[in-house]
Length: 263
Image 1 (tube, helix red, strand yellow):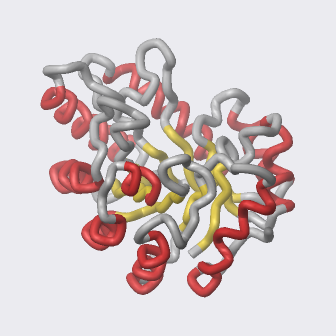
Image 2: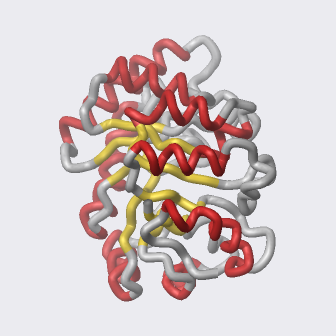
């Protein structure tokens, strides 16, 4: 497995233009950016190239007024979703990123089934229009994001099975799973056929994981490795203090990682 720095959270205390060098200096070679839309796509591509970084994940855009958590599953916003996804695809093409987190949003009460059908149709459209991109769905816990389309990995698995889209998969997040009160190892085991990307943070504070306290995390990483997963693990947390000191949490995972940051 390979570690990826989430520039938006792990280095969110720094100005955007300084985050790339900080990730490189800590030994990361891969990064995630939640919403890389503050600058033109080529700006991000240059920053990544200049610092020897690979962008491995972006989110579809959000809108604080109409879709703060995305709109892929919001009935009536299909045209806006296509515009959003095109923006994400532009970043991917400029930077070489191959994966997009398709954010489904929070459908209004009474429209959840219509929202599901909208999401399925939008996934099919994105797969047909951008066959070179991996589409990823992630369960967001109900405490942080009340009303989101899905808060449990099982719900994501159901959507993916219904969609039947070959390049669609799951973004499995240790933090959201644990914060939802679920058994991390059991959910991971059930999700293995669908997992395309992994993220981690400690629960409930979303800071550095504590492998002794965060139940199931160490066992989960061991199972991931045993399953043959060799993809990226996004360090998607807000550091409690100095980033370099906080990175020590991952030292016990060294046997499972081919690329790890330097504390």
